[in-house]
Image (cartoon, rainbow, N blue to C red; front, top):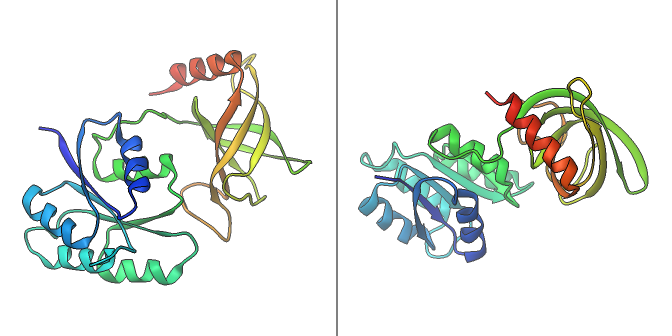
Length: 233
């Protein structure tokens, strides 16, 4: 029987976004629009994982999380709370409620799936990443900069750099695949998630930012896909 994941948010757009993240995984998706409904679904369905927004009507996410963790029959279910970026008071509230982890909005697909997979290994990994080291040049706001690739996939790369970039910044990229006679990749990218000194999301990676490719030639796309296929374990 497929694993059940409960998505709790009063904004349907965020529910649909998460469904899109999980569409390649063999899971049953349950939904609730507030904490009261979420508790009812938890008791009836016993989901294996819960993603829950903090700010909701009737019963907010922190209150619902605290109720789940106070129930001996539900407390073992991992609860991942979702908060607005930069609001430390929200994070403190979630931690006090007993949540197992949290994400900040806007949600990043890679971070979302990696966190889900840390609790449920069955979650599919479409964007398989390869750890590697290679120089990368990028241009933003008319300024040429450089960094080092920490990992890459057919869909994007992580750039280790001291330069802080805001989410959704569009940059031009050029780098060589780290292998003998590696193809030169030219593409545009979108900063999907920052990981700077003042906005760290993933401590296991050096300071920098994750990039999603948004305009890449078919030749470069094929070269990247081939590289990832040859090097994935």
